Image (cartoon, rainbow, N blue to C red; front, side):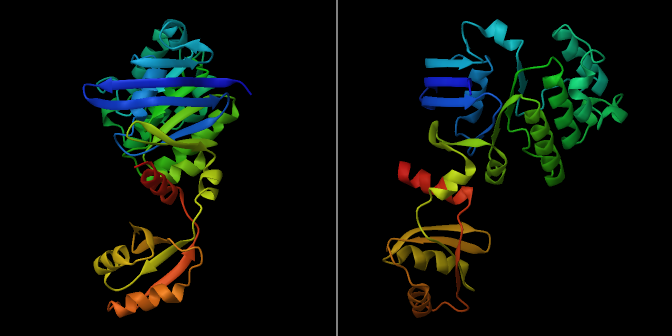
Length: 305
């Protein structure tokens, strides 16, 4: 399978801030690939470089076999880009925005309607409504329609589901799966760890670095330690006491539970319960659980410090 994206040693600085540090990344043609990480991880900077909107300070980046700096004019005809912030014309209608983007690429809505039919049909009843008056989910669909109207070979989507409701998030990912089924390569960034599981492969990013690249399943399989969910009546005291426990490896809050790993190779839950009861904890609950992507991400962050 050929590479749709290939970067070698890509770096980008903004003053004293190292936004990207020697990024090596390969995305295969036809993949739905996720850049996963919190704000400030470097996701947007990397996508903007790949979308020919930002120059790297060093390193090389190729998209569809073309160099992003030298071949930017050619690449822009083949790229669909959806920025993180809604950037369409709010005072134009849905239809006017889409017609404008089609005209920029020397096509029309009618000519390429088949490309966006599944997406646009959901907002077409509101085509006369001003874009600024749309809901978050509808803005999302309009922005994706505008990014698709010129039949791109690759899509760059920068945090497309941030700030929209859970139903709209699910609908959006269903649309991405359909686009992938048509052979389009998709690079999507998100701060939501649960969305990592919807990608073919992911790159976990933090502070301008890639911590791991793999399938979501393999990221979880590489966790390497037994993981426990621990709970008691006094959550704040529980954190402090587990952090002070001589065998503790990591403790992180996850909802009403703490996720705990131990430094010992052989662990008895009764030993942990006994320790916590000696510290005055009541109604102690501890159970072995499978790690999630967020557990793996936090473990990789700590290994990288």
